[in-house]
Length: 117
Image (cartoon, rainbow, N blue to C red; front, top):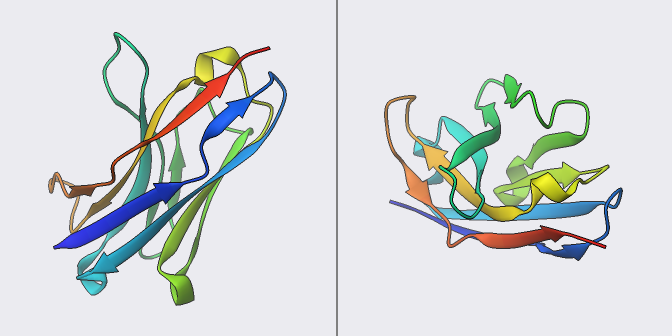
């Protein structure tokens, strides 16, 4: 079992930046994919970005060029740097860790990101 704790959310003006962190503990050697998802009110949860153990990275089209996912293996932590934030980025952001693609994996508690003037 993997435990995930997110931090770094908050209120930011349009065009601003935030960095989210996701600290993993437990059976971390079993993790193959770590990703960030988000869920806005009334919408389904969607993939924002993910990073595989071999280093491959995928981004949602809506955030490509603005968001960067990275990891620090020594700290067992994955980051999501979010730049040029837009009101439509407002959502609860969740960290996810999977053993393989079909594994629903473990989820963090979520962190709220609100982009508003």
